[in-house]
Amino acid sequence: MERTAQPIRVLLVDDEPMFVEAVRALLEADSRVRVVGAAGNGAEAVELAGAEHPDVALVDLAMPGMDGYEITRRLLAETPALRVIAVSGLAQADAEPATAAAGASGFLLKGALHGEIADAIVAAAAGLPLN
Image (tube, rainbow, N blue to C red; front, side):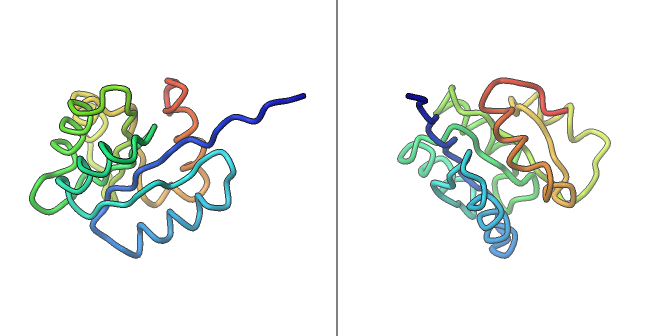
């Protein structure tokens, strides 16, 4: 009998409710992943990660208060097995190296997420490069 793998547990970290709901709806259509929580700020993200034990977190870089780089560092300090994918609505020349330096597994532009997001989550959870 073939055993099905458990869905990858995903935490969404973004202060834009419409973006969170759009990504949640997109991911709900993919049986490989399951959204286990959404946080609108860094402190909430760290708390949810500790409570929900996600496999992958999608973290917006432009967050109020604690930016996405610091959120990534804190998430990884508290949950070392977690994989983080940084996302941004703006193309920044230094975003990929800066997110890698913070410990993120990869970087995606929000505009490119439609066709790539679930595949990127699966790749990150497996420890594979996103690009």
